[in-house]
Image (cartoon, rainbow over all chains, first blue to last red; front, top):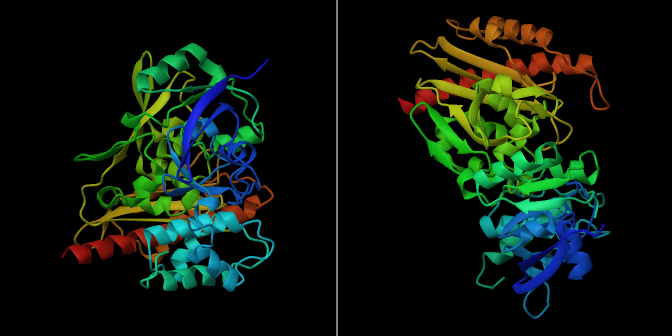
Length: 164
Length: 296
């Protein structure tokens, strides 16, 4: 039995992307396997680890807990959409490099999405707010401290006249 | 792909969702935020032949404040509800419960009705509904009926909704007493995890600080969230002194029906039931006092 395919059209990182998807294809699998946006990582695939976080209409969500068909007509931002238009690192990404906010890098795309969504909503977060914002993202390398420092450094830098 | 194959239908209205449910019956499952259902589908604990998506039904997302109740549509997102200051002023326990629910990413998708319909006995929103005596409006092609929370929660992961019914809205009672306070607390391995035990309480005081109304309950220590109206009634007329709080806490712990699992033994859960009941009652009493002070 062949599965029914559903046409979808999604704005991904500013571009309109269309596809034909079986209903059970998760959003993260569509992003990675069909669109080849492999920056978003697949971790636990049941909503615990946060590695697959993407922004849906600007709000962070777990892309393993959404079917691609449900993203039809919506706006998705993946980690590839966080860098500057010329492809260079964003302020937040640079901060992660400088404070050693990553080691193996598996959680990093999800951490970046969660942290960027926080900074978009709150330019001067407290440490407690930062820890709450990344509370749904597991990291087994850093112990989280350097990630918190990265977000603090990014917030500090972004309040200046420089554009993000 | 982790889930077993299924057919997908996006319902544009409540009527359409009900029609689809009437047609497919047990073979269909409603999906709202999907934060509990999709993991269960990924683990193939659930394999619906049809998935009926109610996320896009705008009529299920409302928040409406009335004199003696706040009404919320079943598909109101948890993140929207937690940010609603007017709702939090009327039903403060709802925001206090949501502070313990999952993480930013799951609250951005998760809905009130989804969590209630999932009926996890350790989940925060079902406990808040049980403690407040929320009423659930269930809609089917044949009409609507309303169930009290106590009748709605039928067992672990089971509600009294029939296969052809869709949870449409929830009525949250608003207490008229000016000196009303509430509190929610729980113990879990990490913040945002499932609670080993959760406790919620709401009390109203008169001008002398005596309790005129009280309700409290526990999650994670039974097959449904538990409320203890008889024990709460004993607090009426008291100032919730330590002896009364301890009496209520030990009575509730004794009446609870905890089970053992990997995370906690039944004995530990029963111990937590007493400790957390006391904390919730003290917290609610303090909160009522603070509100009275802020208002005067």
